[in-house]
Length: 204
Ligand code: GAR
Image (cartoon, rainbow, N blue to C red):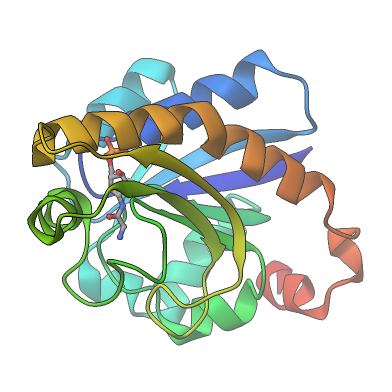
């Protein structure tokens, strides 16, 4: 069974959806841990309701290789899934989990990506620009902000009646519909993790 850690900072609706999907479907993977940098975030309560362990780490702990990799090792994490996680992933973690960290971004990258573009800010920018299409992008996490290889995109129309809130609702629907399956397919396509040297480092 492959073990997934979901990282989230906010409401956590995607995190909960992913936890429930992997619990309901036998696909050789499970969410073993939720990592958050915000003790009071909605995701904390959602994960606890699901009976999934939550680890609250400060920004300093997230940036500390001993603390961060210690948590990953104790939970034998194979894959990291970002679901509204708003801190930068430190380079040592990207290196250790090379091509095993995925993120979802609420736009059609490269449009509306980069620094400051997250959550509602993205939808406000989409509406302000008069775009007639937006969507979601699932991508690998690399050292470039929102710049890793794209695994999947899906789009939704934007009309002149749309507001940032209505665009956000459309995007969330796309996220709930697609993100768990994209994660499942991505994990299923990975080679045996015991063959990867990076994995041996984490098992240390
Ligand atoms: C999601 O829309 C996700 O795409 C976005 O944050 C939202 C989290 O919602 N992520 C980013 O903006 C990352 N740059 P949730 O907490 O309800 O899952």
